[in-house]
Length: 252
Length: 160
Image (tube, each protein chain N blue to C red):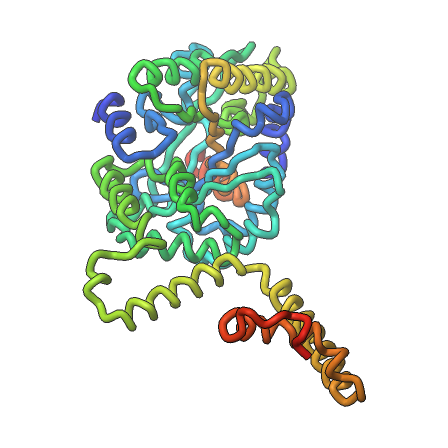
């Protein structure tokens, strides 16, 4: 059934050019109606591989109400095509509880663990995520406004400091900033750890190679002359501070 | 809340692209056939987890044409805001459910699908031409269709 649905919708989508399809998206959700759903119990992970076969540029996906978010995110990562953009719904429209800014932040960070969202660092992703139709469909507008307002407050705090942090001891402040830097670097490196590890190994290899060559030259008879270009930079501060008038050529 | 209020509040959230919340439509799914005379009740029944159901109408004759295109809602929304507007349209697959299983004499399923493809394309193209920032196809039946037996069971049950 789903195959024939996708086939039919693709026939419509294929009548548009690539440029036009960038402006066309597909919305999917478990069908919220009267605070209930028609298909929330059917696994999202069965749907997503087929859904991304649609030749649409954008996908607006219900997400916040999903129980197994890891499986959903993994399925998105594995099946999303490079030309496709996803918009995740970060508020659960069928839950009367209003998400705190921390809840929404955690949902986004959770998604970022699976899907590289460099934009997260620029805070642009929040705007994209909030365009998900989920949040404007069923729920009263007041709560949505509150949700949006809370997220609005949350935006700057990922990179900026809160006012109470200025009254903290400097050591705490330093620790917080180091911790945040690490978090941001980890976020950026997510999915790129192999490259990081490879670079580290390459650096170690080159370091050991250089160190062994250095040790070998030290043992040779004319080591002083051979190592002059290496040792010379170390002496430069001495020349400039202690012996400003000393001619360079007279240095051994 | 009226559509104008929805749009004003959506603007105030700071979102760069807004929608009318699909409030102008009589229904997100059946707006294209609202007012169509060749419709019968007793179409596909969609069961929900809490026990309530929604039932689609079914087509009783051809040729099939949309009565309303989503661009008409877009034009109303654009009168109320200068923000970029995302326009939602219903997926062709959802409208395809209106063709009855027993068929229609003189109007084959194939003819219906041809008409539907033209109309669904026109629905999207008119919204793009009317200045939609982007168009969103509502494909909520995608997930449900993975367990279509459930719908079939429910429909049969009601028919009996």
